[in-house]
Each structure stands twice: as C-alpha cells, then as structure tokens.
Length: 293
Image 1 (tube, one colour):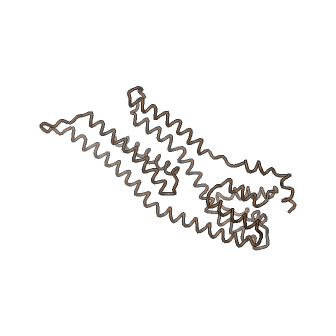
Image 2: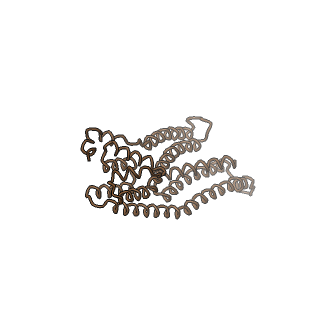
Image 3: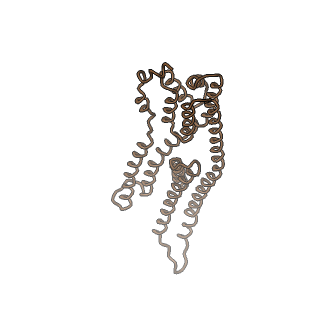
C-alpha cells in the first residue's frame, strides 16, 4: 500500500501513458500512396504519348499499385500477427495469475509472479507490466497501459473486466479464471473460422492462376490463329489484336487487386491483409506473364 500512496510522486503516469509503441502503418500508407500517385501520373503521360520511360503504361501502373499495396499490407499484417500471438497466450497468463491469487497473493503480487513464465510474444509485455508495478504503478494502471499498447478488442474486453473486478473488491481469482476461459474460447472460435476460410482462400488463388493460364493460351494459340486465318472477305486488324492483348494484361491487374482484397477480408476481415494478398497476386501475375512471354 505504501507504493500505492507515493506512486504519484515517483512515477509520472502521464509520461507512461504517452510512451506507446509507435504505429508506422499510416505513415507507410501515406508514403506509398504519394509514390503510387507519381507512378499513376507517369502511366497517364505514357498512355497519352507525353512521356517515354521504356515501359508500357500498364507496367508503370502496376509498379505504382505494388508500391501502394505491398509495404502497408505486409507491415499491417505483421502487426496484426503479433497481436494475434499475444491474444493466443493471454489465457495462459490470466490462468497463472488466477492460480497465484488462490494462494492468497494480491493482484500486483500475482502479476509479478506470473511474469516469470514464458508466454511467447506476450512475455515482453508482461515483464514490462511487472516492472511498472515494482516501480510503484498500481496494478490496474499497469493493466490499462498494457491495453493501450496492444489495442485489440479481446484484450480491451478482458482487461476491463479484471480492472472493474479488482476495484470492486472480492475474489479476483474467480473472475480471472472466467476471463481466461472466455478468452480461450474466443481464440478457438477465431482459429476455427480461419481454418474454414483456408478453403475459400485456396479457391481464389487457384482461380487466379487458372485465369492466367487461360490468358496465356488465348494469347499464344487463339490470337495467332486469328492472324493466320485467311478467309475471303474477312480481314483481321492487327492493331486490334494488340489492344486485345493489353486488355488481357489490364484484366489480370484488376483481377489480382480485387480478388486479393477479397481474399484478405475473407481470411480475417481486414482490408490491410487483402492488400498483402493483392500484392502477392499482382506480382505473381506479372512475373508469370513475363516468364510465359
């Protein structure tokens, strides 16, 4: 209790609340959009014959799309994966805190004891929380700071229940056990949903590569056959063949971006993850067309 009384004199809580991990997602997205707009403008100039860069306009546009989709998509997905790993180990931590509380320990003591365990990506956050408690920060405030760093719906819900239970008094261990069970069930439901969505993801990717194969067959077999056809009264306009080939490439670009975003939304409901899939599909599509000639 002594540390609880003097903690305002020792710890500047306003600075602790402000010392959050930086989120570089929006800066990365902003820079990507700015660079992408430059490429899109160049693509328009190339299309209007106002600039020559040694690439076709749709190739320049593809580079711009890759710059927009890739960096932000991969960064946001890595952040989300880290948070998902933390959520996966949160039930184990809450269970250990509840077990320590059953031996008569207070919530701050239980957190310090549980911080010695191994919880994967969650361990650094738990040790940071235990260190703050040892410095004089109340346990409820340390838990709130933990929520500010993680910021996921599951963590916010679980910690809010624990903080209110601790402030209300009574047996916090029972509440921790209940919260741990609820968190574990929520994670299991999320994992089951992801497993079910894997099949749809596979269908999207397979359909995309089948589409590329169809484009390749039409470009290498069907269009050359049209040029070689010599029917009396029928004339094949060669420029139209070139325009059809450009339409094929543009359709692959649209298909890759659209289906990639849809795949990400189906997987975990996030457009950022869809941008990552869109980048992968777009890059794979353009590389495949290049390799296939």
